[in-house]
Image 1 (cartoon, rainbow over the protein chains, first blue to last red):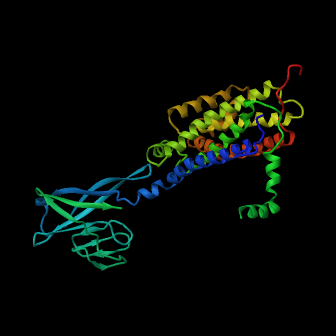
Image 2 (image 1 turned 180 degrees about the vertical axis):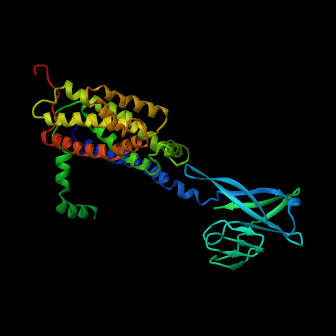
Length: 166
Length: 219
């Protein structure tokens, strides 16, 4: 008769209980592992650099020696599903020996944009009057470090900068 | 060792008593149709778990709802699986709830002393349909938008108070951010809270009264 337990081996009740536990365990693992991955996904992604490219700015022959020239371009940054346009401003100065200084125009204090003041011969930040010299070094103000520099190269007369972001 | 731990806990929590009352009940000889209630409960738990996980990424805002679901489907690890289970589980749950109701009705299991079980069951059916209705809007795609437009418009046909109900549901005359956010609120807080309470009563009554037997010919 179904339902009776046998003298030897596994009873029907024991078998059902075991199978419920076994199948329940398998289902838990099948659901649990994806659930953990689902939660961790964006956190694991950010370990990889999201940007690593050479951005062409313009022709080197357009630069006047000793005169800072501002180049700008925009790139789209994506966080999750949100895309935001980021504008970049790059000051390039051709020095007397022919080499270049390539600075970001982002102030190293609180990320305001510095601008070149021709009459004073400095880069000035409008937010807290941070002042940088023509070579990017600190003159005065609250900024912790000189203007950030970009790695650059020149290909067929075109100036390119190395843009990397974590 | 495990047995000693269990005995220690059982002495204080009465686990064996709970098991005997809740799971080890005497039941009449019944058929597979009597598993539809358990199946519905299981699906409800799955919907709860997957739904909680969906809120990790979903944003109830017209500009981000669709995009955030796109992100879940295409970017997040196993996002397609979590949302897929929630999507198909919802459909399946409506089906099992209906079949569960039909079984109760045709076997006459709603009669004395189970009237309150039936009434809570009717409310649970309405709550489940409410979950389906509010959840349908959340992807904020064309289908969701127009389905909710039509669905809420239907209330306008009620004499006198129809237009008021429609505006109360939408949070205004049109489908807007307000509609999306209140549907989201109803979907993840209000309806689930109501459903949990009703399920508690429903299952308590099933345990208290036992399940009915399959009616015989002379009944």
